[in-house]
Each structure stands twice: as structure tokens, then as C-alpha cells.
Length: 393
Ligand SMILES: [Zn+2]
Image 1 (spheres, rainbow, N blue to C red):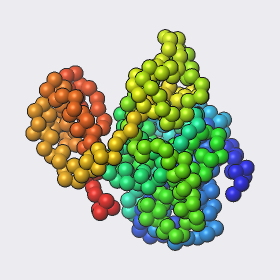
Image 2 (cartoon, rainbow, N blue to C red):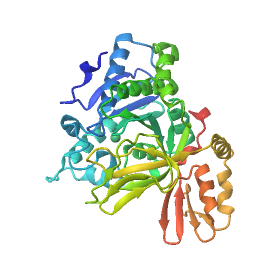
Image 3 (cartoon, helix red, strand yellow):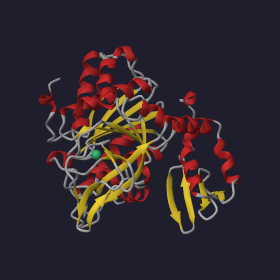
């Protein structure tokens, strides 16, 4: 399909389309355009749906594609008043659902209300596991990558896409749709397909959709034409890079900071400690440690200047997976300075004075990634469904 047939972002429907849904099986929900200047995921979903409807392959479960911030898409902006991908906290959603008569609604309130209704209507048809695929692009060029909340099932799904996997982003970003769907107990993978305007980003997103549908068990591998060749188009972009990274630093842009990224940075560009990355009204911003650049900001909207990531060695990943399968986390509350939260079994309270820094690394390995500080205590938790194994899928 020539790209020029799929480049209109005016009046994009909320429901982009669906396929399958005639029996039990996984429900794959694909979301594109949560940011209005990132339409590539929408075009890729439309392309995949066209191919499915014309080829009519056998399909287990259902594939549903939804559009995110339609008002912002029509204007080619990241958002109108509020970033729609930072609004999915439990408190806000509760207020949104009870406050149906509110007159002073912003454009993103309307978008979120509609999108939530579309998600709920889709989930009501669930007849198997639910898999959420959130498609984005970045303002900088560079290799595509996946983002997950670190559960073993999410890892399995994300690693079926041959692009670097980023762990730990959720510790830095609140209110994302990815976290929201994950917290509801669904598998959730975010895919950043490339630069916002690049036609290759649409191709990369299409590959991510096919691989997700195959890994989920909706489609047979042989029913996706040229899947190996398509997969290779993504794999070859990432061939020189480590497979898994974790986030080490995030530069938050404050109001009136006048943040300006140094020109020329790409996703996964190697940076050295002390290297000049950006300027703002406080002066120079330099790298705090060696690592790789991720999502340098080259657009006017957004509050994340950049992220720095570093490689997670495969040894640690295998060790972590093994420890989790053995449920070794059960011994954690017996260690000094650590106790289980009285009401939340998946949350641990760690006395920061007693538990030393290496314990934090141990928590990461066991899937405890969300940290907040509560005075002298550190709170770590993980999602209950990480106890599932692939065999239970
Ligand atoms: Zn985005």
C-alpha cells in the first residue's frame, strides 16, 4: 500500500477497525496516535486491517485497533491542552466517570472519556487473554524499541519483536495507558517505531502488529506473507545494539526552563559521562554517567528532555527469570529491614537504613520496579499477575 493513501489525519474514527472475534482466543487491542503528532501507528493498523480483510486468514480471538487523541491528530500536535498519555491514574479515571455533567471540559477530557468507553466496549468481548499494543514514535531518529512493565509475560511478548527492550521507564512516567492496562492485569507492550514523520516508522509498526498477533497465537506464522523478511527489516536496524536496556536517568523540563537539546542526537546514541546534551536557562546539561541516549526532545511539547539508558546483561536477565520462576521473592520478607505491606501482598516496605543499595538491584531482578520513598522507608511493588507462567497463558 503506497504511504500516500494513508496519510490523512483529519477525522480519524475512534474505532479503526477489527478482525476475527468469532470464538475464544486472545483479544489484541492496538492503540495508535495517543500523541497527535505520531500518526504512524494509525496508518500501520489501517494497513494491517486492510490486509487481514482482503486475505481473510484463519484467526483465533480478535484484533481491535483504536485511535488515541483524535483532536490532536487532526491538528498534528502532541496534545491540545494535556498529554493524553499521562492522564490514566485511578483517581482521575474515577473522577472522569462520575463527573459526566461537568461543563468545563478540556479537549483531552473528552478524548479520554471516549477512548475509555471504546476500550471498555472492546474488553466486554474478551474471551481469552488480553494483549495491549501501544504504538508511538519519537521526535528524534534512530532504532525502534519496545517498552514494558517488567513482567515475564510482557518480556516474552516484547522480545518477539526484534528491537531493543527498555525496562524501568514506568518508574519515571506516571499515568501512561501502558501502565493503566498493565495494572488491570493485561499484557501490555509499548512500541516506539522510529521518527514521527518517517515512512519507515509505519513499516516498523506494521511488523510489530504482525509479530504480536503471531506471538499471541491469533495468527499462524505461515499466514502472514513475508513475515520473516518483514521481521528482518526491523532486526537489521538493531543488530549492533544490546537486546535489553534499563532507564538510569530522566531529564525533567520545568515550566519556563527554555530547554534546548543539542542538535544531532539519535535514539541509542552512545554518550559519555560529562558529555554536553542540552541547555536550559540554568546552564549546560551534561550526562551523569556513560550510557545511551533515549528520546531526546526535538519538539516544542513535552516535559521529558531525554532519558539515559544502559545495557542489562543477558546473564542478569536469565538469573532474574530463574529466580522469579522459583518464587524466590518469598524469602525477601525474612531479610533484615524488609517487611510485607499489611494490605498489599505484592508490596514490600524496605527500611532504607538497614537494606543496603544492592538490595535495590535484587528487587529489580525479581520484578519489583515501582519505587517510592515514604520517609525513611522505600516502597517497592510488582504486579500480582507476574506470578503467572507462560504455560498458564
Ligand atoms: Zn508518543
